Length: 248
Image (cartoon, rainbow, N blue to C red; front, side, top):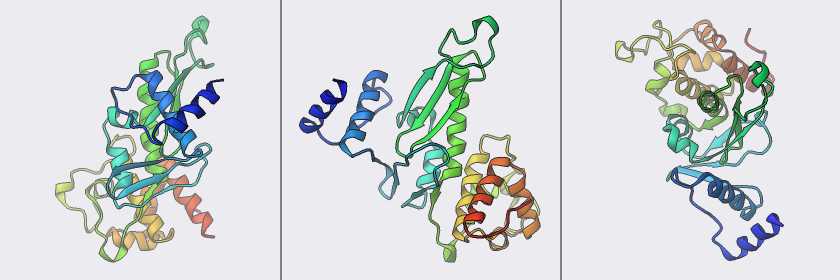
């Protein structure tokens, strides 16, 4: 019955509905499903005039989502919590996580789906729904960094500041203004990781070619990639798709 109602609305209403942070949750979920129904299970998101993303289907094993703009992926990861959540659907559910006798009695687990890309992140390790929400949102940012690619022009390429910040001091193009090297435990690492993956994809998985662009030896860049498990996995999966050996 609900599906028939949505289909009827689809014939009478505009094909897109804008979501805002002030939109009530129950209306936001209806609008999301309404938009998807109107577009035959596909939708798009435009953070600015030059960037758009195709809605990925399936789970987090889907291939990276391409951006048609130069900074679209970066804008997603750099968004405020409020703005990023306005593009998401959030659900709570009962999990089998910690809690002793209180286990499964409250829907403290959180699942967040980024509607434009289809990327999903979840957290259930804490009994606090608020803490799980924060953890799921942080994981969503990391997944967006890993999976949303922006195109770059190698002929005019200059590493962005967020990438320079995660490079070791031995980089010949890294200046003192970039501060100390940022590691995987720093929340800002996701932006640098995203920029590095954009470069790796642009050079078809060649670590040596990417290293030249970053003023590093191949070994130094390889060590940086191997310092983070998710970054290593993303690079190795792409290299495997090109018939290249994995980094170890």
